[in-house]
Length: 136
Image 1 (cartoon, rainbow, N blue to C red):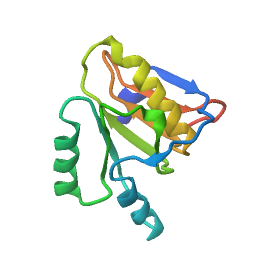
Image 2: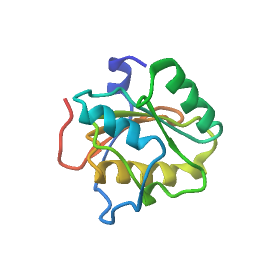
Image 3: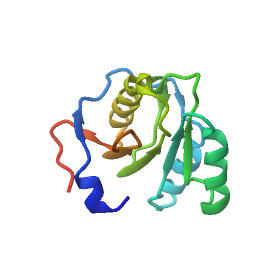
Image 4: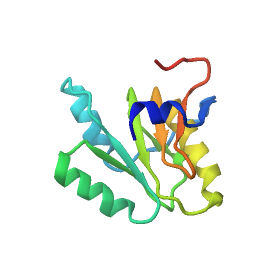
């Protein structure tokens, strides 16, 4: 999806959750190690069916620190996420029941310092950033 297409998709300003996550998200430490070495990684977060396989495929093609996973059996708010300027969330369409989980993920990402997240959603992607903070 090009930048112009993302500008036409729904934008959501949300408030962050107050309670911190209790453990790091899968592969989060790889992202943080790249950041500690001065690299600003291009990270994709995979959720939904086949998330582990898709994340592993990206890590093989683009290296460690290029992917994270939201496991199906863990609430997004229970995890800690690395502070990133931007994050792409790949979450294949699988019904409207997942919308609330996507919003909880967005709140947790914003809580932990992600400035902007593009979350895959039907019919269009969700553009998410912290309430009151404009994204250029």
